[in-house]
Image (cartoon, rainbow, N blue to C red):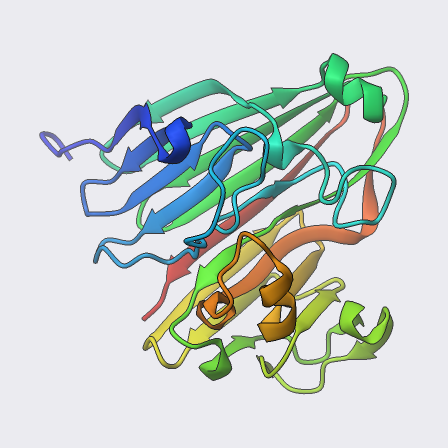
Length: 289
């Protein structure tokens, strides 16, 4: 629309002196994206409501991952391999590859490429781009290119922490009939019978070939968030519950009640890329009510 106010993008000091990019939308949305780890640390919708959870105990420094928001997991999910847990992308320094702002959306792309440090623990040449698009919804796109001369494999995730008022009154909807691997049960595989997963204890499940659309119903908070995925075969649902939360130094003992992770992932089966090939996965989250 002619004369409409455009979205905006600004770089400013963030928590701990780390640089962050702030995206704002003329209808009221706001997102904060850190160069450290390409970490999305905040998304407020048009009403000003915060949709993501970040721990008040989280360290904001260049040596540690931020606890909450949306960490980028690459090239290894969890401890499924020889690399540091969840890989190196979430603690790496990313660079700005591009940005644009119109009256419809604000868009920023950050890039991480192989370096002497990454090749010392993972021999592959690669380029990884994270693109964040803020409009009425929030869309994240992770793209990985094999820049080397040999095939490579990786697992990955957008490890999204959603804010809920009380996880004991929250459900993940849309999982009926989906097979999952349960880490809490020593990796045993089962099939979800109910459409809605209730969280009543420590939960750590990889739902394999999950439906492309899931919903979080935050009953206590009176809202529903829809999560749509492409390119990511799996959905991971995680909450540490009380015992594990007490062991995590960057999570307050009671904060597990206010968070629920529903992650877009390729965790069960690695992505394989031939030289020059590119993989793309997307996650779009929006509030429905």
